[in-house]
Amino acid sequence: YWRKWSQRLHIPLEWQDAVIRAAITLKLSLFEDTGAIVAAMTTSIPEAPGSQRNWDYRYCWLRDAFFVVRALNSLSEVGTLEDYLRWLSNVVVQARGGHIQPLYGIGLERELPESVMAHLAGYRGMGPVRVGNQAQEHFQHDVYGNVVLGAAQAFHDHRLLHRAGLAEFKRLENVGEQAARTYDKPDAGMWELRTRTRVHTSSALMCWAACDRLGKIALVLELPERAAYWQGHAQRMQERILREAWSEERQAFAESFGGRDLDASVLLMIEVGFIDPKDPRFIATVDALETYLCDGPYMRRYEAPDDFGKPETAFNICTFWRIDALARIGRKKQAREIFASMLAARNHLGLLSEDTHPVTGEMWGNFPQTYSMV
Image (cartoon, rainbow, N blue to C red; front, side, top):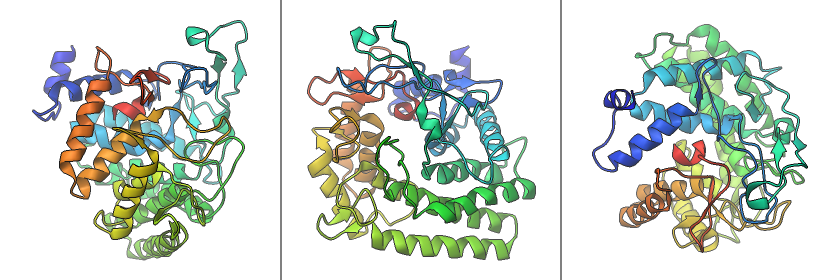
């Protein structure tokens, strides 16, 4: 089955085995009844030994949407792509006043109450074991951009059996309005901080992406007035983000408006087309992140202490963002070397978890992690 399935995929010759394994893993993460793709198959494998950073990842995070759609499109796996776009569309349909949760159950369940299974020792005896995830209660404004970025594929892709049209655009505009309202408001951020809120640069950035892509969709639908409306929002938001997120002290785009702490998520600026990768401010940001967030080939998420202290392990998706950023600013040799290190960090089945310990190279966090594999 898998040989026949992979034969129809668009796979590069270089790194072919790794790409096929990642593609199969992504396909196996799909719940076909609804089109949902889970973040991981496991719960409560700690992000670092004895850290108590143990979470239930058997749900569907909206922060995955842009990367999942991009990966499926690159693979030309149109069937799975269409299933996932259907799930995203249903998220938008049931959104209340445009508000979207950070995550849902595979059947679009909204309530995912978190509890601790005290009778279970946990992975290697490192509890707690959690079922459910409190993050469903959070306000994470990056979700609006991720939803629109993912859903935009349905307006542009002629391979789809069910392309999106005017009705879907009007529903998506509700998401855009929420993005425009909240981009400069404090939230928990994409890393789901439980006790601290800020105006996170990555959240504002993704809200910009929502408005920017709605403007592009409006042009496809030949709605010039709506295109001008969303382009106007995007331009104003972009100007403010560039002004408020830049730290003169650190010579880098910071984690939050007016802040100084560094955060790998600002690398998403080039992923979503917010800034020219050759812009001196972006190059300076990459240099700062390389200095303060990297341990060898691996990149941590952020430098500021969170609810549990400072993160000990590297976050694999951040390392891949680093690779992409280095390639785009012209440091391709370094990017390829780090990518080779990440391939070597996989287990014997070619899979990655959420985190890698920078000293031991051991995998930590829930497994296999969709965010890491796409």
